[in-house]
Length: 143
Image (tube, rainbow, N blue to C red; front, side, top):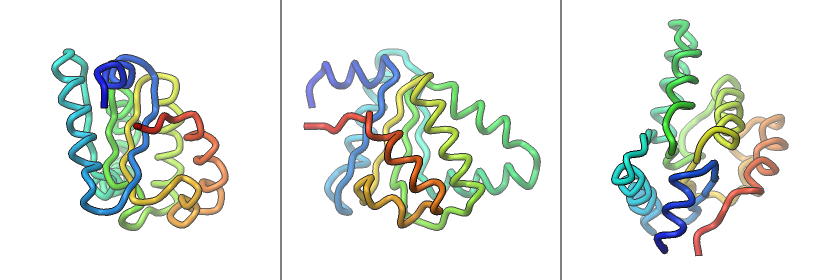
C-alpha cells in the first residue's frame, strides 16, 4: 500500500473496506493505517464490531446513545474491525447505518470484514441490506 493511499484515507472523507478470509492480515493492515494517521497527529478510533454492538446495546439501556454517536463522529479515522461477525440486532443495524452515513460526510471510515458488500444482507436486516451496499459503493479497495 503506498503512502498516497494512507494519506488520502487519513486526511479526507474516504471509505475503505478490507475484505478477506480469516488470517490474511485485514486487522493488521487496518492498524497500520490507524498508526499512520496517529503519526500524522490525526485522532483515530478503533472498534471491534462485536464490542461496538455491545456498546450500542449498553447505550440504549443507559440513555447514552447520543454520546456514543458523537464519539464515533469525532475522530478523523474510524476503524470497524470484523464487521459481520457476531450478532447485530435491529437497533445496532440502524445505528451503524447512521454512523456510516455520517462518516461518509465527516471523516474517513475503514471497515474490515470477511464478507463482500454484496453479501452484507446476510448479517443486516432487510432494510439495512438495501441501504448499506449502495452507500459503500463509493468506498475504495486497496490494490
